[in-house]
Length: 197
Image 1 (cartoon, rainbow, N blue to C red):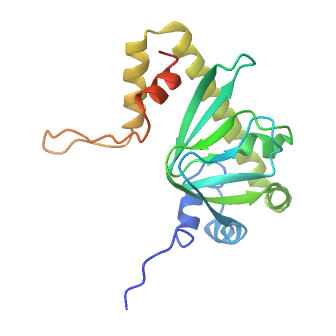
Image 2 (image 1 turned 90 degrees about the vertical axis):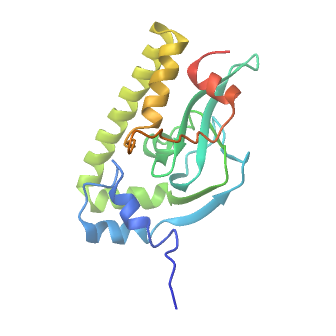
């Protein structure tokens, strides 16, 4: 009998890789993992909309999620794409304000959710988690500033090259071969992310 690991079995190691939970002791991470619930979303399904209450954050186990904002006249701006291993929805959960963007599954998505109530309890029990949250939010702010700077100051060619380099981060070519890159979304969605047409 061969046992195949389920997404929940991998949850503690996935949490350990995140900025929010990674600096906690392994036994604490294992305990926290038990408070998450697995959820699935179909391609094109809205996970939450801008303005919704932030009742839970999510750790993406597999798939990709696009974040966008829509202007009053109906124009849409893609803000970013999140993929496996990333935590999403943390801002509204931490500050108890409405969601800042709409999140839609670009592919089928498996994720793990943690309620705001559970996160509040954990932060009281584990002071390091509050410090991690500050570091995590500061990194989000830096990333957002960098994205705005790219759109405002650089040509579309430079924005595209930078986007592709970030998407390839951590991958290396072997024996002079090309590195495959599966984005999982359309050219139009890529243009929206880059602030291009």
